[in-house]
Image 1 (cartoon, rainbow, N blue to C red):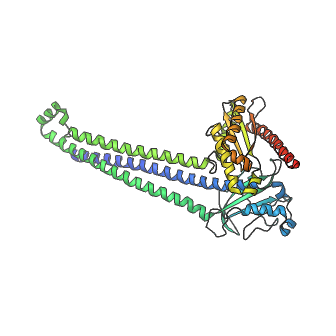
Image 2: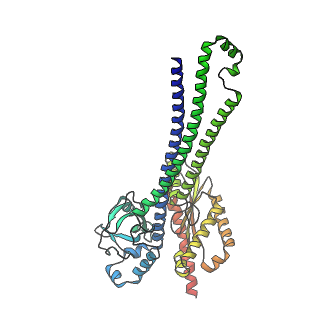
Image 3: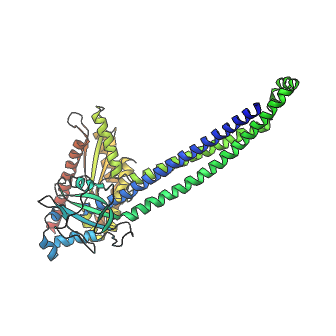
Length: 457
């Protein structure tokens, strides 16, 4: 009876140890797979939003809002200018192929219907007549908030996901139109599924390896428990041997020092394996997080990182913490003229150079590209005097490191800054408005100088 009881106990120990190790492997694998899929979705959506935001930054909202059917039919200069800008983006009319399927502009008529405006695709929407499919992200874009569809929608062109970016008028506040970038739902799902499948295979292999280690270790434990059962039976039959074993405790269980060392070594190896998997998971999550929050052209933060930072500041202001921070806004001067004269490659180089210079002077993690030609720098725990010194340092350093670009292409920025004042600022947006106003005042002076130079010539 005792033999059966101890055999049952050893079986339970093996089952518990094996089950625990397999559950740990499954949990790690599931977390890795779910996190990977979410990050991949975030990366794709961010790329689509960057395309639509870049297109929106290159377009003149007032001009697009004023377009009529005559402009479309007669291919007037304002119409063709916007048309050619959108045509510069790569498009694919073949369902399921290519990252970007279509790029186009939507406007809101006086009757509040949202209709197609400029559409450079082979099968465009009917100009100012054909309505689009209404989604939450689209409606929010007309309120000034860029976004991406949560679900794919089906229209006459196919099953698509869309990213939306508002096109503002000259006042920088009124939304005149929305730039839309479509991607095929089949391509989107294929990218997510492929990434998820890769993580599933990694998880499956991890479980197999972990299961193998668990079974090996559990088998050894069971062997030792079985040996213990045999010794217990022998001890019942021979009291003298039991007394002898009590006097020599190292041999009570029939396990020598070498066996104990092996068991400890196996447990240490298993611990090391789980620790390595945990470290690898942390590194992967950190990499995907960086991809989702980094602007691919400049290497500084993107709109996702910017909104996360401003939300945190708003939360502190709401809680009465009165955070100490300053905001510096940069707007790249004459970027459109540079693109038109020297090509978008030079314009991108302009953006990249300024983005890296801003990061170098103001420090990593503080700068964000929030539009095609706009960069925001949020400086925490820095007063206004220190902010001025950093701006001056930026101007000197950038001019020194980019003399050829400044002379040939006219690389320069208009800047504006403001510091949080708890006496007048209810939230972050108040600080932004003051910095934005100061920036446009400087930009107006810059354009006046350019105009005066042209008139002299």
